[in-house]
Each structure stands twice: as C-alpha cells, then as structure tokens.
Amino acid sequence: MKSTLYILGSVTYALKAKNILFQNGIKVYIEKVKNHQGFGCGYGVRVNRDSERALSILKNSGFKIIAVVKENEDDIP
Amino acid sequence: MIYLDNSATSFIKPSSVKNAMLEAVNKYSVNPGRGNYKLSLELSEKIYETRNNISEFFGGYGAENVVFFASCTVAINQVIFSLLGDGGHVVVSDLEHNAVMRPLYKLREKGLKISFAEVCEKDKDKTLDNFRKAINKDTKLIVCTAGSNVFGIRPPFERIAALANLYGIKILVDASQAAGIIDINMRESGIDYLCFPAHKGLYGIMGLGVLMIKEGETLTPLVYGGTGVESISESQPLLPPERYESGTLNVPGIIALNEGVKFVKSKGVFRIHKWETERLKEIYYYLKGNKRVKLYTDIPDTENYLPVLSFNTDFPSERMAELYGEKGVCIRSGLHCAPVAHKKYGTLNVGTVRISPSAFTSVNDVREFIRITGQILKLN
Image (cartoon, rainbow over all chains, first blue to last red):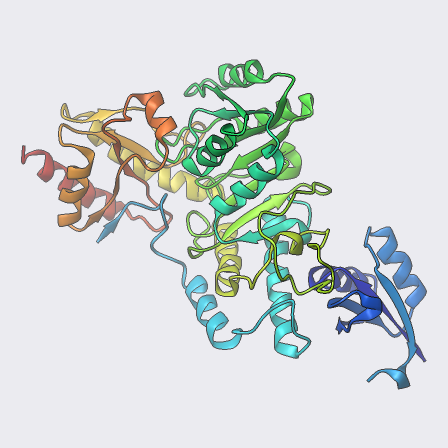
C-alpha cells in the first residue's frame, strides 16, 4: 500500500490539516519533514488511505501544499 | 490583603490556570514546532488547541491567525510598525495607552501624522462622528481601545470598525482591558487586528500577548529569527503564525491561557462584567457621598464602562496608594501609562487612584475597602 506525505508550512498547518481530515474520516499522522528539496525543516501529514480525497479536501480548505511525496510503506524509515 | 489592581494584572488565578502552569513546567519543558518526538508533537497539539480556543472565543479567523508575542505591547508594535513604518496618517482615540502612543510618536519623527478622535462618555453617536471627522485621504489605520485602562470608558469600537471598513481603512482594537470582560467578535465586528494580554481579564500569566489577524492580512515581521520551519530560507516564512513568532514560545503562558479562556467562557463574560460592575458601583456610591473625593465618570454600568474606576482625594494619588498599601489594600496610582487619557480629564499632573475588581473580588472585599477608605480620609 502506498502512503502519501503532504508537506505543509508548519506544525500549525499540519495540525489544522489533521483535524480537518479527521473530521472527514481520514486518519493521518504528523511528521517532521527532513530537508526536502532544499526546503529545510517543516511538517507534513502522512495519509495511508484515501490520499486523493485527502488532497482534494486540503486544496478545497485553502491549504498551501509545499510538496507531495509518494512512497511505499516499506520505504518509510 | 484586598487586591483591586486587576486591570494591571489579575492576582487570583483559577486553580486550572495554576495547574496548567505546573503541568507545562513538569511535563512540557520541550520545544513545540521543532522536534519530531512524541512530547514535542503533543505540546504542539496543546498550543494549537489554545490558538483554536482563542479564535473561537473571539470570533477569529482560525488557529493559524492567532499569534503569540511576549506582551500585548509587542503585538501592538507589530501592527503599528508594519502598517505605518512608511508614514501616512493614523486616527486614535483620546484614551489610548502608551503601548499605542509611544510607537506612534516614534513614527511621527519620520513623518507619521496622528489625529485624535475624542471619545464622548456615554455618547456613542458623537464619538463615532468624531472618528469619521478625523479620517482623511491618507488615513491608513485606526487604533481604538475597547475600554480605557484609566476611566473604564468604552468607545463603540464595533461601530468604529464598521466605519473603518466603509472607508477601506485597517483597524486595530486594543482589548487589553476588555478581553474576558466583554463579548468581542472579530468577524462580526469587522476588526482587522485584535490584541490583548494573557494576564488581565483572561486570568493567564504575564509575559504573553496575543495578536489576532484577519485572514489574508500580511504584516512585515517585527522580529526575525528561527521559526522551526523553512530553516534553509534566508527569509521569514510567509504564513502566520510562525512568520511572526521567531524564538521559542512561552509554553507555560500559552497552556495557562488556554485554561484562563476556558474559565472565562464557563463563567460567561456578561456575568463577570456584571459582577465586577456591581462591586464597583458599591464603591462608587460610597465615594460619591464623600466631599473629599473627586470622581471623573458617571455611575458604572456595563453598557458604557469596563469595571475600572478612577478618583482623587485631597491627598496626592501616590500618597493614597501608600496609605492603602499600609493597610493591605493593593490599588494603583499615578498616570497608568496613559497620559493622553489624563490630559482629557485634566489629571495629567496629579494622576488618579485607580481601582479594578476581578471575578474573584468578594462583597466583603468591597466592604473592607470602603471601611479602610473611610479611615484614611479621616487622617487629614
């Protein structure tokens, strides 16, 4: 199963995203993001299921998504 | 001890606030928004919850638009220096605190023009008209207190905000004395910037101020530094709240404030305001009957005043404070950092004795204050 990490501006936005997605029945995990594409520290939400729906909800809720990282669960350290 | 200096700092705190402080120090002495370990994330959630509760309580624009500073003064400076750093024109009420006036006077040296709008006690229409007349084509900002920290007078800030919206001018409301006492709704009132401290009517602790920002408003940060995000970038993050929150946050203060807000919410601002006003009324009637006392405002009521009362006697205000202090009564004397308000009432040279109850001020506290006042006034 593939998981998707949506990188957001800060822990505040990651928590806001978590709440909104949870209200829509999507469980996510907050992660601190490594230096992704020279971006530096940040936070994101990892979605294991319904990633497309999650993306749509985040976009419709006005989130600025800095990057989307798709990976296999096996790849997650 | 009888404590009647709550408009400076509320002295008695709810036990939930004290417990939250202890929990913050004992359990959460870590950095929020930086680490990826469980405790750091847990703390980040608590801070987010606080932002969310504050936003809901004041009708704000979501958790991300609630910004924490070291004080309300810093929050006010943030807005003023960002919006007026290039000059222009500002309209302020004639009741403002130095937290507003000193940044404006500093910018006046660089060409900022300042106009004062007279707040007419109990005449909201006239006050609104005075604000309207003070606006000109260069006006960038209106700054208005939600209630005077010296005389308790409440300008009609909601109507002034509507006026600002009509003219396309930004409005900053300083709710230092009003937060936790009156109902304030940013969205309904059309307020662009709302600021208040934690340690007064919200029963939090000192060292924390809050700035609430209308969605989409972007300011030039007052302070630059580490924010825990986008660390490689040479610039501050673009989005609030981290854009304005460089440095480690006051975690105990924030967690305590969350409990303070919950406390006020559970009691209800109207009940708190009414309780404090009733206590103040008892004092007012007593003082009014004494020929040696000069009062400056009308009988306290909830519609026109915050529960703050200033008076003078034929003792200097500082001497009154000493005499009260000797008898275990804590009140404030002098100018209360608001010379503009004193100029309006002719008390610039003498200051005033100021009393301000809290939700914890009892009927007995008031009776004792009255008894002690009687003793003091017989001395001379």
